Length: 69
Image (cartoon, rainbow, N blue to C red; front, side):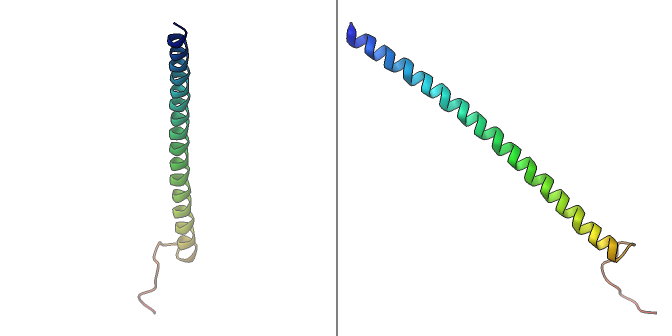
């Protein structure tokens, strides 16, 4: 009987550890999602910055002068 009790307690401890691991994995996944969204936002901001530079140099949107008059 004492051995079964020890085994049962170990199984309970293992189950609690697995639950904790699962919660940590969920938290990690959420953090990765947040990081990905931030990277997307950063990329969009960089694109907007690049477009702003282009528009500053050439308000009509052209990036080079093809003709000279």
